[in-house]
Length: 559
Image (cartoon, rainbow, N blue to C red; front, side, top):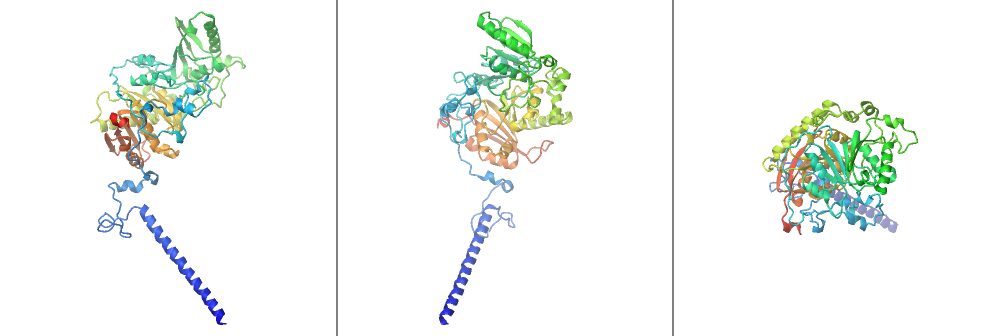
């Protein structure tokens, strides 16, 4: 009996001991949770608005409180932006001073990509995977100097405003057109031997890297009044004329193709055979010769669908399917078909655009496709006029005459930013983000040039291309797509010239986060931050941060 009693007492004592242990664990976990939450949450204010004890410590745990002069911003700052910010970003090796990440020929060789050289695939965009990105600042070459573009007045032109110059060399044709108030999108591939586009950009001539290969050029349909090819070394007959059909997509109704090449005038058998085949193809495409003189021939695209409807149904190239979107241009493969006009364009027999400069402010017909009316369009133009005026006031103390020539608007919307700069001797590369690419057609209808781009990737241009970058709500958008703010900042630094400016307009938390990188980027030569006026485009609270990139010392650039 006594033995059974001892066993029972031992059992009860062990249960009581277990209860104490469990209770102790629960209390300990509770205290740890309180400590953890308190370390993340903002400190509670005390009566003198400083928070904590008289010695500035936390009243519960006695540890020092974190102080910040901008407590309100930190209170609402996203925790994703509280990651550790580097005090400096490494500088790339000098041999990378002309790196274009998505057009890096060395990357193609290293990854052993199997590309079709005949179709120029090696000149198209091939971006490095995340583990192969350099994530360093591109240094300027030793002795780098910036050219200043003279402030010559440009003469008013006629109805031809937008021109596409393919295989443009150093863009001399585009430079000549500027004096006639015509703007050309001059394109050429990234030639490893002669950086011709880089030379053109240094001269302040609108140009970019591009190639007619396997994919559509990143421009909407009916963007150009004229396309030009002067000894551009393009085989226009390959793959059933697919490259000429891409020009057909890009030309406006009645647009011209100016072609200067031996095939147009040489009388030897080989060139006559090419000329005959090319003429036959263009006739089936309903193009007609409007002029042929010396070494140059000019073809014109039809104004309507009438010629297409008269062709035999079996004629090649065929008409594109009604399901094909002619304005889709980002990573879209070329198609060997003719893009017919819409019913409205067919009926109008033309683009319906006014001559330049009237088309700059007149509401284009294609606004209807976006669901934007003329009143909203005019309001957008007026708002951007005021916004740009405010930007220039912010920079007034530091900018000089001819400080800017090459400008990029990283989210061009309807082109209001570029329109507000019409009186300045600059040109703007208007960029429509992929998710907003439908608006790029309005950019071209206003008489500007631009391109589609995905800002989660590197831009197709050389380092030190632009004098000013304007980024409106871009950082907010790329975060929504899971892309890195830091990667975009490093890319902006790559394409920004020394002494160049960035204008970043975004939410307060984004601006606070970007501001932490300015020293590492060496963008702290001059800073200005304001809370802008509220307007119809302000969907939320915004701030404007303007920063200037330093001209690096040679010793810094060669670290």
